[in-house]
Amino acid sequence: MSFEIPAHVRPIRDAVYAFMTERVEPAEEVLDRGGPDAAEALRALRADAKAEGLWALGHPAEIGGGGLPFLDYVYVNEVQGRSHYGQVALGTLSLQDSIMLDRHADPALRATYLGPLVRGEITPSFAMTEPEVASSDPTQLATTAVLDGDEWVINGHKWFTTGAAQASYTTVMCRTEPDAAPHDAFSMIIVPTGTPGYQVVRETPTLGVSGGHYEVRYDDVRVPAANLLGGRGRGFTIAQERLGPGRIFHAMRWLGQAQRAYDLMCARLNDRVAFGEPLARKQLMQQHVFESYAEIQACRLLTLHAAHKIDQGDQARVEIGAIKVVGARMLHNVIDRAIQAYGAMGVTDDTPLSLMYRNARLARIYDGPDEVHVHTVARRILRRYAGGGGWEFGLS
Image (cartoon, rainbow, N blue to C red; front, side, top):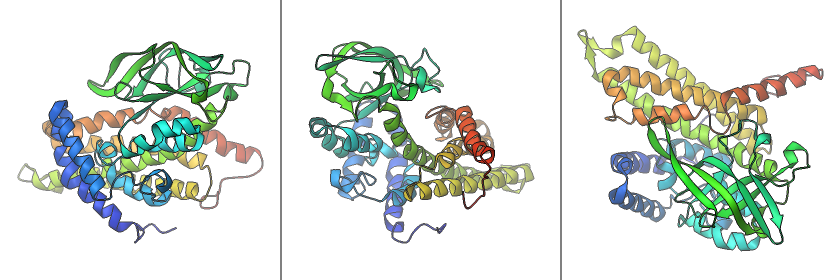
């Protein structure tokens, strides 16, 4: 594979980069405030993205999306990630949910949700994590769904259901097969958020801000049996299918965030004068530049390698687990150095670094904490050696 951005991807990537830097990033101050002005600004951004052919680029063409191949979209997703509003403004927030419905929902569910999702008329949410159990081990999840005639009856308690208060539905991971093996005991069920018994408890503050993550209780929630995705006991299979490429997308968006923080840091070091010369001439500041460059570049190559393997049909479990850990650490480190270069200004909201830093810390927990991925990656590699094989870099 080439390390260059493919020539056929460059025009659309450049167009998305321009949209992000010229329109989305300047609108962040208004969007962060919320309220009617933010809603109007977001509507305008979304309308512009659609008019310019930048909407839902990663969604398959057959369901109304831009139809970019997976590896091509990875390069675009990198620049889209410069702002946490990129996914919403460009219609890619629903990508994983749209693909999940397209593959596993029955015709009635597809007709109800799929088109509106891709057009951005509704938003989805996904419920897996629970406050009472260590959700890093999802075989412990306690939310249940019991079939009663032609309805599922769901009871349980979830949190970090992102966007639940605004979403039209939540895909809920439930225990439906209590006597099955742990990884065959769960199913995915679509729950419209207006269903009786679906109770949004609160928006959970995270690191001092309200990030749109909700705690939800399910109290005898009844939905049609047809709201099951992919068959009984298929929850883990669908979750892995959803989370693998999703972690690639996370990692590429983190690279966009890191690039933005790196740009801010380097500009600051050249502009800020201390002790009679620009900070850029201070060796400790130069070390920040070097360390950040090395970490971003290493993570970018790891991510592109994982994406390449997925594009070739490989599950890339080791590669994905590695970039989830390395990418999240890299993002945190680069933003932290940028804040240090800005000094007191870096911890204010006069730059985007403050919010970026808080979001970066979450990256080491969601979609599996670092410790779980370190364990699973090492275990997979060690199994090769235990079986008489090895791990030859470049060939494995």
